[in-house]
Amino acid sequence: MVDATDRNEAEPSDISSALDVEQLDLNLYRSRNLALNFDARGVFGGQVISQALVAATNCVKPEFTLHVRHAA
Image 1: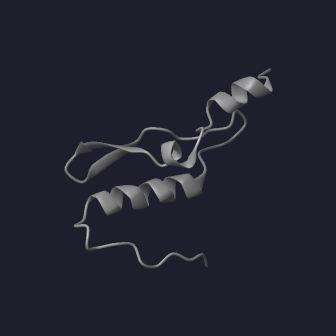
Image 2: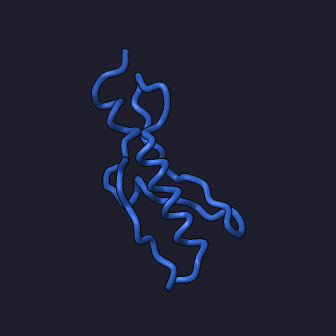
Image 3: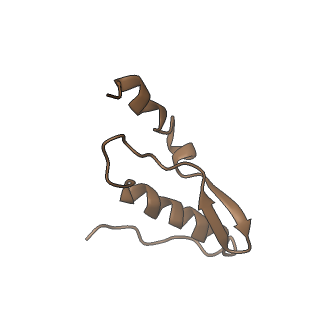
């Protein structure tokens, strides 16, 4: 059985580290940190989408910014 301290070790300490991506090549990024609870079936989708937005922002010129953010 996993205790509470082991569960919290996988969780990022702040939002900036949760969204951190590593550049592998031109327009190719990989997550540095994915929060995965011990009893989860997968990763949190909101974190994956947020990391994708960070990577996409890094792939375009600074004058192109994200301008639409909404949920269905």
